[in-house]
Image (cartoon, rainbow, N blue to C red; front, side):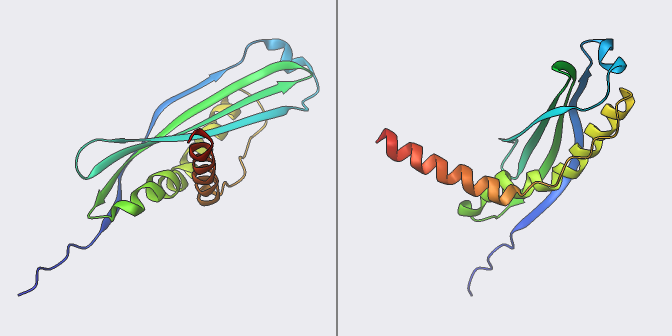
Length: 150
């Protein structure tokens, strides 16, 4: 009798805010016309917790300047614990580097919007991000870097 192959399992088991902050360096920003310049940075990392679980943390940082003055710095570390069981090894990188951040982003986006609004700034809605494309580009860049160092 042939052995049955285990079915791959992928599930989000928990989602949580690992860290969040809003810094408003000076009150003078509230006395000027609001026409901000935004610098938005995204990054993610994954940590293996046990044989089947990974913690993925998506970090979203927003630095806002208004009239050449720092207005606010907002940052969230949105985390999730994902079950990856019997997933082919060649698919794990794509799942952790693109799929999981894609799942976490709407939650991080909501937290950023909330803390910015609580800081009495106008609502900030981050545009959707194509994490599949970003992951593919990072993989291509890693290959170019590896060839350059060979």
